[in-house]
Structures are given as C-alpha cells and as structure tokens.
Image (cartoon, rainbow, N blue to C red; front, top):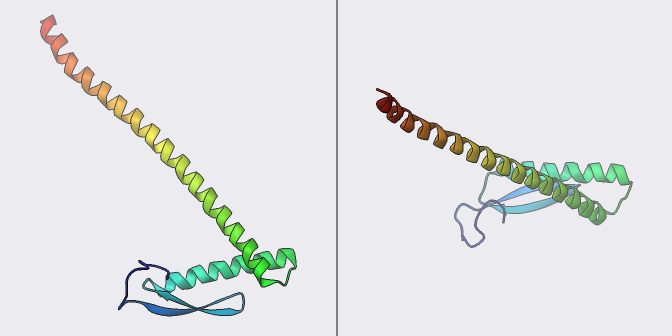
Length: 117
C-alpha cells in the first residue's frame, strides 16, 4: 500500500490504476490519487529513458536499471540534505555564540559605565 499505514484496515483505501511501461497496475492507497499517478508517471519516464539509452527490450532489466537511477537520485538528495543540515547547524551555533557575546557585552557595558561615573 502506498500513502499510509499498512496496518490500517481502511475505509479510506482506494484502488488507483496506473500505467507504467505499457503495463497497467492497480495500486491500493489511502493517499492522494494524483500523487500516486505522479509517482507512476515518474517511474514510467525513467524506464523509457533507460530503454531508449540501452536499447534493451527486457522490461525487468529496464525496471532494475530505472530503480538504480531513482535510488541514486534519492541517495544524492539525502546526502545534499545532510550537508545542508550540517551547514545550518553550524551557522545556528555561530549565531547563538554571537548573540551570547552580544548579550554579555550588553550586560557588562552598563556596569563599566557605573564604575566610571
């Protein structure tokens, strides 16, 4: 099942028919039908790209190669996401440190003024 918890016996479940690489599949989902169709269209597009580039007619081989390409995209995206998270954490720590210093200096400055007077 796509789009929900597999353990739900559900009133909201629907069958969505999609076509991928000239094959029709019925997908059980409690999610958005448009989203499911979009996923199927994406897989279909990847399979057609692979098939045109490799000139293979074996749909299983095309599906496996398309899956590898999609998995590569996922891993690259996850890696980029992890790098952005690390950069954000670093910048957040820098901002926190700058704010801490600014507040410390603000607390110290009035005391220095009182001493000078």
